[in-house]
Structure formats: structure tokens, C-alpha cells
Image 1 (cartoon, rainbow, N blue to C red):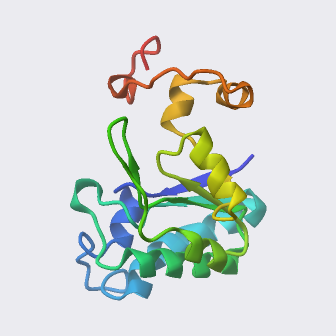
Image 2 (cartoon, helix red, strand yellow; image 1 turned 90 degrees about the vertical axis):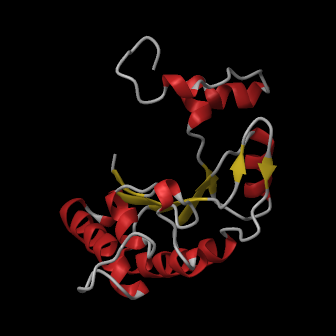
Length: 184
């Protein structure tokens, strides 16, 4: 059991990290170090409360949800990966700078490998992977693990389906974030 701190996708922590939305002029704005301070203080507080082995964090330095991008996402991701080593947390979960839709697949030009090498713990990537891509990234040493979000929503037995190479249900975005327990 543990806690994955959500520092991604334009949520509060991500807004502090990204220079295109963080316009603070105090110790939490401006420089890369200052913008990362809030996230690292949260990590430290949670580690102190429940122990480092039960703390994880998800980050998305390359994403630009709601125009919350960063002028140097590579440096942001690397700084966070290096800084997290101080806390010896269970894992760092980072969103790959790639998009994958049924019609388009864009391979990342700036993979997460430098950030993985900088982080001394388990490094998990996510970003539209399918079974083949996920196996490849792990086999090539570009990640320790791969996370599957949307596929898991539509396929609660995803590991078994991968094991059998069984067909997958397609996910429906309309079913995401709904209070209807039958649909969502």
C-alpha cells in the first residue's frame, strides 16, 4: 500500500512546476529550483508521514494540458528525477513525450531515458503504449515498468489479455470521469 502523488496533467503540483503557468515571484516561482520546491516539499512531507517505501509520484514535464507547458521540459524532468533521489521513494512514474491515437502515433524525440538514468529507483513510463510497445521499451531498458491507463479502464483483466494476446476492448472517452457506475 502507498500513495502516488499526482504531480501531472495540469493539476496543482504540475502548475507549480511549469513556467508557462507559474508566474509567482516568491520562493515557489521563477527558477527551476523554486518551481520544483512545492512538489519536493509535498514528497518530503508524505515520506515523513508514511515512509519512503510507500511514496510514489507521477509527473508529466512534457505535456501541455490547458496550455500549462514548460519552456524546457527536458530540464524540468531531469531536475525532478535527480531531486527525488534524496527521498528514496518507491518509484517515479513519468509521462512519455509521445501521443498515440488510433490514427496517429508520434514517437518521442526526447525519450525519458535520461530521466530514468538520473532516478535511482523504479522508473515507470506511460503514454499510449500498447502491448508490443510496452514490452519493447522494457526489453530495451528504457523503463523498468509501463503503466496502462485507458486500456485498463476498458480491460480490467488487461494483464491476462496481454498474456493470452487476446483482443482488447476499445476505451470510450465519454465513459471517463462520469458518475454513472454502469458506463464509467
